[in-house]
Amino acid sequence: MKVAVIYGGISSEREVSLNSGKAILKNLDRNKYDVVDFKIDEMTDAFKLDADTDLALIGLHGKFGEDGRIQAILEAMGIKYCGCDTLTSAVLMDKNFTKTIARANGILTADWLTVKSVEEIDYDAIDKMGYPVFIKPNSGGSSVATFCVKKKEDVKYAVEEGLKYDEIVMIEKYVKGVEHTSFILNGEIFPTIRITSDNEFFDYEAKYSTTNGAQEVPVELPENLDKKLKQSSKMCWEAFNCKGYVRVDYIITEDDDIYLLELNTLPGMTETSLIPKSANARGISYSELLDKLIETSL
Image 1 (cartoon, one colour):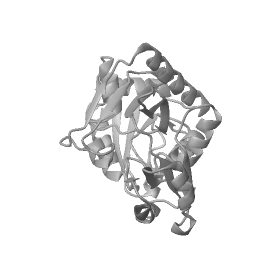
Image 2: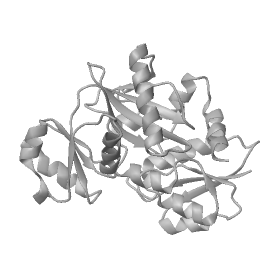
Image 3: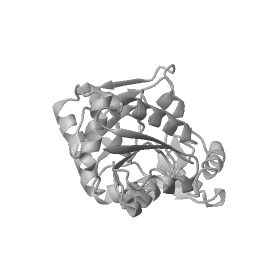
Image 4: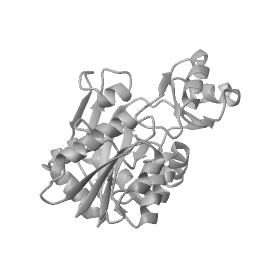
């Protein structure tokens, strides 16, 4: 079977994608697959993929990875791929759409608003939500250009920074709690990972550095809480018509309320990423995990 590993890309998360791609290439079983190293440096590179490729493992992140465009190209070329389809990918890349659909389906998510310019900032609405707030690009990932803003005076700068990465910036109410992530493979929910960090929140550095004090450990939640989290993950999987695999990120409060943060259709696959850790907690190696991802796509 000819399997192409697509990685690199054009987004602000290119560095992460390069590391994801290298990890996937390193762990694919060469005895089972004819592996093609396919690094993308510009969008048109995607059309150079051989049409006889049996399957694409997408290690891209951010724009032209998680936004449905690479999926649309692969579909047009008749090449199967791992993960969510074009429409689901495009919707879940947009945090505003994600939260709107989630809330309409009874999934708890923090209050938010969006702006397209600094002139649109509604300080009264932010005051009503209450500080601190998270300010971030609406379609960004890996916490790039994400700020925890504690006072009015810092809002404009954070919005300006977010607008460097996207046309829309989200301003989201801060929910105090502990971040947890749920890995779903073909509808099956894997062990939950709890995330704590010396950093104020799980930002870009905390996600991808190995020296920042971040702790990402599998946890057994109390039975009722575990049931509630799995139910929320199942609702997300079904509401967004997910396929293959996704990672669902939550904040769990002291009162055991579970707030959806986002769904990641192409989550990080580096050696330090959360999905390999969740799989490992079930006794599945990185190489075996890749086998399972491929199986779900055939």
